Length: 134
Length: 288
Ligand SMILES: Nc1ncnc2c1ncn2[C@@H]1O[C@H](COP(=O)(O)OP(=O)(O)O)[C@@H](O)[C@H]1O
Ligand SMILES: [Mg+2]
Image 1 (cartoon, helix red, strand yellow):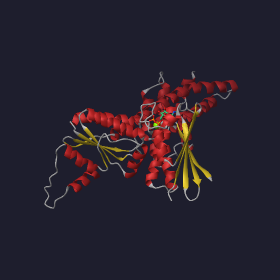
Image 2: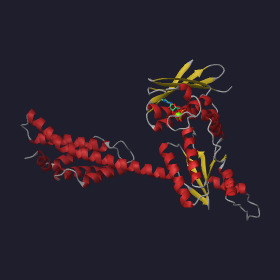
Image 3: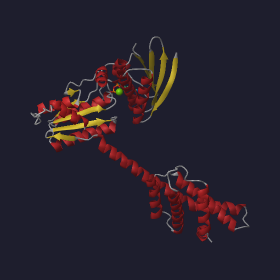
Image 4: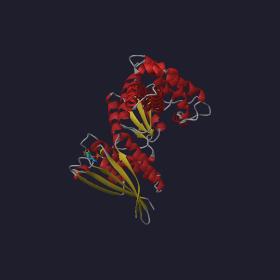
């Protein structure tokens, strides 16, 4: 069962902080420990900053997944930006078009339990899930 | 007689009506903490200022500017000005129309039009002054925050600490770099401890800025030690796959400080018989 929790628009740099804080609060609510809260906040930070840097605007969506025996926090980062040309390259550490570390998306994949990316020239959708530990 | 002259001729009546209506409107009831006395005085000042502006040919004047500044400093909302001007407009129109009992529709529209032409520039000027003042305050506060946001504290000859608290955005990252480099030169620092205990999230952007700062510090011939890495931050840094091996990292400020002492060939010698040890001294520093 999925339940939409909230959605945070990303338009300016400080929206990244807002999205991160919202995510951390949901993580706390769903019972994640402090290390997982930090992982979730960091993953959101990466995804929201990519939206801000490469697509200018977009949004971060939060959903609760009720499953047995654990609960999941599903985060969807969606934008209508230019998209990623070569997704497979981007998923290797060190690939950046902006002089960044290029560890963002591969890092997000390692921070979270499930990771999915879909990107066309009409935009990018990154979906990640973290499950509570049992 | 020009419309302006008519308004000025009827000053007393308009003034009294305005004060009455402004009070009736409970214009100022957005805050219960403001004394009635202050509201009364400010109302009087506003209506006086409006008439000074009317009598003054150029429209824009110092009184308007000072009044707008005062409202900003009082922390009153812009609505005080817009409502006050709105009431002035309607009272003016009413007063002029009452003086001319034979008024027909055309005359009425004409009065409306002319009064608007007189009132609008004053209102616009007041609002612009209000927002200019407001912007000034905001940019001053921003400046004050910036000064706080990347302080460099010389703790000893050759050793400096930069405690970072709060979110690091692009502007702040630039400021950290600038302060770090100019501070190192100014204080002739050998070792600088960057304390990230208070940084809530270390993502790849923050890490990248720290790595770049450490590299620049190294080019100046000094060493950067990253301290205050909380356990959960250490975990996320590892998960992100960020390589911080090019410079020393320590979990706490006190451990980093001990490393810094070694690097600069310094020792802390206790003069206390009870043997107040290094740990305690470090703890004291950490609480600063
Ligand atoms: N939402 C997005 N829209 C378009 N391009 C993106 C988006 N997210 C990432 N990219 C591209 O993928 C590259 C790698 O992203 P990332 O792994 O976060 O590293 P970095 O942001 O440090 O470059 C970016 O440099 C950019 O070219
Ligand atoms: Mg990125």
